[in-house]
Each structure stands twice: as structure tokens, then as C-alpha cells.
Length: 105
Image 1 (tube, rainbow, N blue to C red):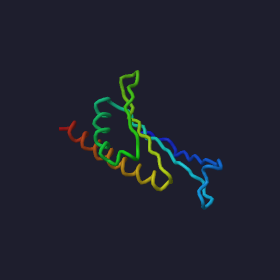
Image 2: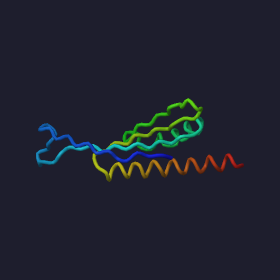
Image 3: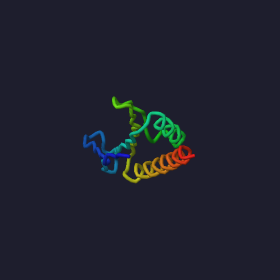
Image 4: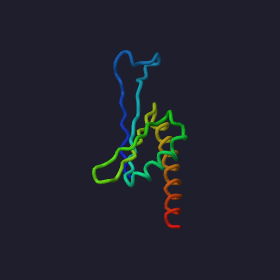
């Protein structure tokens, strides 16, 4: 599983300042899993019920026959994005472990 470092975007325009003088910011990170298309579909189904308003996910077919499961997490703070990523990785790990057990049977 590959990941991309969080990206923090701060809007320094005059419209972005709250009354307290803080900047409005957004944190974004992406998780990319690469493997078999069917496995990507199962992993996506495993995370879909997990608070879908906190992330976007899609499957992209690759020319080599594999597929990427791309999950983009956005939030207002590093802490909220980290919590979401932690939850998603736990769900993905559990689903992948279950798939491994089933394929070994």
C-alpha cells in the first residue's frame, strides 16, 4: 500500500480569515492500494459504510491488468484527517486479512 504525504493548503485571502484572525485551512492526503481489480472492489465495499462524507474513493484500472484503489481524505485539521486515515487503514487491513484467509482455504 502506498501513501502520499498530507498536503496543507492555507488560504490567506481576506475572505478566508475568521473573526478570530485564524486562517481557514484544509488538509488532504491520499491512500493508494494497487492489486487485483476484484480485490479492490471488495476493499472499496468494506470502507464504503465507514463515514463516507470524510473521504472520496475510486478504482482506476491500470494498463498492466491491476487496479488502484485511490482514497482521498480531506479535513480541516491534521488530527481529523489522521483519525479518518487510521479508521480506513484498520478497515482495509481487516478486510484484506479476511480475503487472505479465504484465499488460503
